[in-house]
Amino acid sequence: MKYKIIPVTNFYQNCYLIWCKKTFNAALIDPGGEYKKILNVLKKYKLKIKKILITHCHLDHIGAAYILSKILNIPILGPHKNDIFWLKNIKLQNKLFNLPHCIFINNIWLKNKQNIFIGKINFQVYHCPGHTPGHIIFFNKSNKIMISGDIIFKNSVGRTDLPKSNFYVLKNSIKKMTFLLKNKKDIIILPGHGEKTSFYREIKNNMYLK
Image 1 (cartoon, one colour):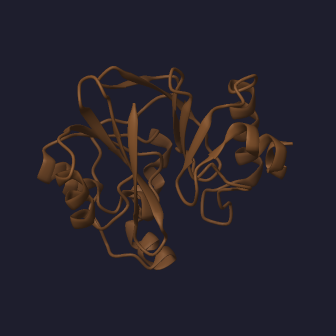
Image 2 (cartoon, one colour):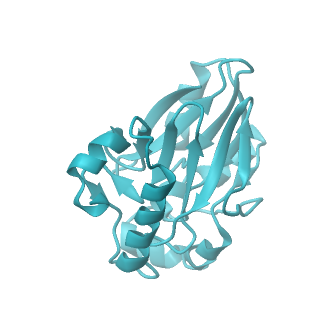
């Protein structure tokens, strides 16, 4: 498995290009904006983009998803259906995040413990609400990589001051994640914003995992 981080918008949101080294099948995860920038990166790689995956429906994570799905003729998968609130309130998001209006229509809602394949790479989906009601993470066991969205960052966690967010629900999701990853301290965390980190580092330094 290989990946490329593509920071987009003023939120420095991490859009991820993930691909299988054997098949060259690839996916975009959370293309939050600047679709032309993302397309320019794709031109540098001879990959077969098969799908777009979404961790949650905040505007800074979905802003370029629909237009890219049309240009590349690929489906959008995710997040969990409980994030439909945010899709019905795109105008509210424009005000909250000060980002351009966008259209977002996904093809498939994802479920807890569902498996998603990118070539020979298997990601297991885990529903981890709190930052949003339908937030999910993608975990690849064989490569020990977790795409965490905005659940957890280096030394921090996602915001819970927005509509439909809940700090106690987020804490419970982090506890569930901690149980899931126990005895797997070498797992790499690829967050929705900021630097990548590791589960071992966050166990030692992140107050929300103690």
